[in-house]
Amino acid sequence: MVRIIYAQTVLTAEDLDRLKKKTGTDSTKEALSTAVQHYLECDSTEVGELWQRRLERLTERT
Image (cartoon, rainbow, N blue to C red; front, side, top):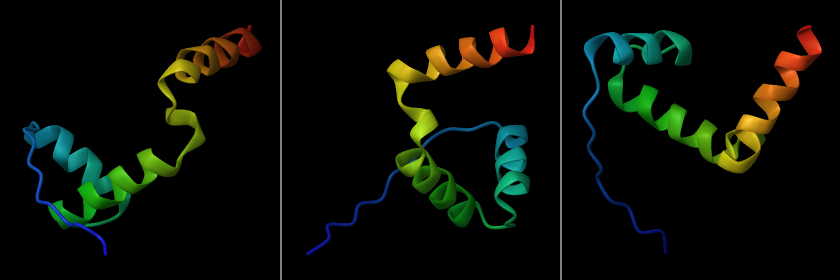
């Protein structure tokens, strides 16, 4: 059985608008849900690897 909880956060209106635009939805609930799902599933969001990948991308550009 899946346990569902309600979570809250504080965002600026500008950040929320950007998130809605990026996720392609007008709904705050859907935008946040989509962003969280992406964060949990995306390989690029591992904190330890995140900075290493950013540095690699920067060095590839030069």
